[in-house]
Length: 357
Ligand code: FES
Image (cartoon, rainbow, N blue to C red):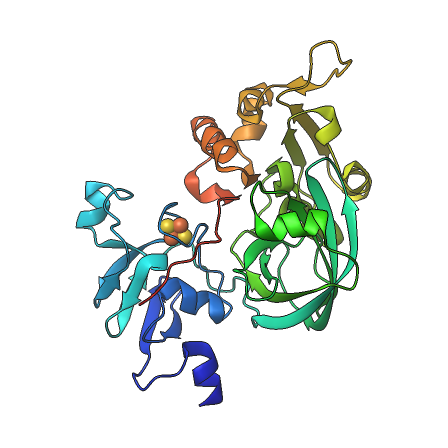
């Protein structure tokens, strides 16, 4: 009963049983939970991003059963999707047992116990004017897959999500690092930049997320913007450790040369990569005449300069602001990379999570 209460928040009503095809993964959903909340709490890498019904990443087909929907989904779905019974897992509370279809939830994908633990700040290292590297010592080890994220909270304030920037340690990570971008008006990030000191405490819950490197021999095209570099570095570092022999291109978009960071980590990756590794920094607002001889503008405009056959055969991993991802995906599609070979983690504001009344 203790485990039941922890997962489903108590109450007398029995949980619903949910099966997700074609992976044939089953889990229970508590009476006041959405399908997505339950899947994440039980460690499944259910495809999602915003968690608030605005991105469409958690689209799922309702094969049988009924759900109560927390928000109107019609503006996100096409007429065909509505007719096919597509729902948003982050906005759907089961009214009984369900069978669902979601091709993004794969059998054998990462599944780790979600750990809630105390985290003490070990270091705060400024990387650029608005990016900080936060190092936390965790009271309990956390197992995760490179590319996943943690929720961090201070006191009773709402949790915010940040991606691990390192590949995990064997047996669970006890020292975790994150790149934090200062969010104007953001309570947690303002505190981290202006007031936090080593020794201060946070609460951490992890892991979550379905941004991880899929097995393949295809070249890797990694595209990062701003603090989105973190999970991309983690994913590539894991591949380097695993001696993955796929050619890799890392495109890193920031505003100016002063905004580039983690260049030593990228150089170490390139040195240790056993196939070809190409690093392409792209600056969108570097002043004319600054002496910068590299790429300028936005990343999507530079994708066309890649060798077309290599681009078409790549699998793409994107992490950064939604505008960067929205601009890049049509270009990747146009170059011949199918939707299933494009994975992304858009840094939308996931702070206002759906409330289930
Ligand atoms: S719409 Fe459900 S995760 Fe974004």
